[in-house]
Figure (cartoon, helix red, strand yellow):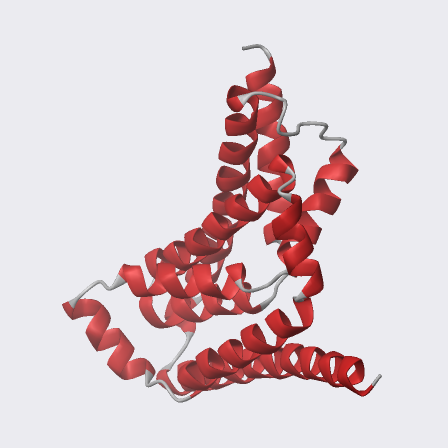
Length: 217
């Protein structure tokens, strides 16, 4: 019982640290916050936080067959996830912020934000190895033999830490939301979409080139 607060804190630090790097998920959170509001940005981040919990559970439980599968197929995963990011980026690039604002007043489709945030994070195999590295840096010695109580504390902490980051990010971005005019929202949509497409192209190109190199040799 006494170990619960410490393991919870370790999980919070790990979840927060893993979420801070501004990748496609961060850009998506910023775009959703500016175009639909802070709740949409936070919900998108919570989708990514759910993915972090899944990868953290794989790291803790040492599911070697899944880790081996990811390691052996990371080039294909990079290719597929990169193509997915390109599609999402293109959709954001061509989206109409005026239409999004009008839809936001009429309905709250938070499940779309959550699902997109989750998919953008879960298809990134680097998250698993990043979490493993953070756990090693923090000196977290928990594994599958630690018991469900301790493991639950770590995983809960990861979710809370990751969600905390997305809350801070969406709240901070929302402070400047009203200062943006329509033209600037158009530019932000295009910039975010183009950046996500670029990251997707980089991931897809990396995966494709490595696959071709393996096939040639």
